[in-house]
Image (cartoon, rainbow, N blue to C red; front, side):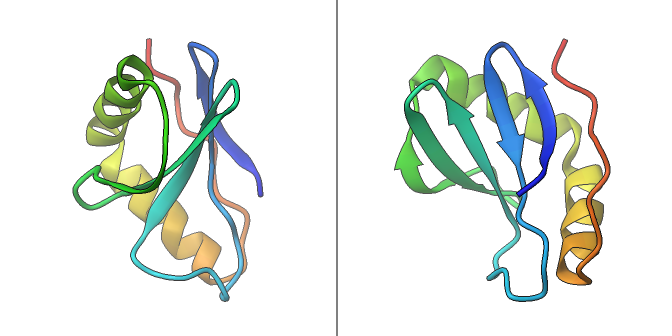
Length: 88
């Protein structure tokens, strides 16, 4: 699972391969916490992460929603996703 962005100790990854299930989502990691977040509405699908980091991830996702959806399409076609700028 490639890393598509990293910021403030948070790692954002996306599986790539046609077997990945919908809805479009990302996997975020912070220390020992892992969360899966839907791209469309930035809602947590699974897992738990500290609220401060969750807010940072959601803000980043709002800014980069179109890029995330483009990466999701690449992943569904078995292609490697592009890197996305970190939150600054």
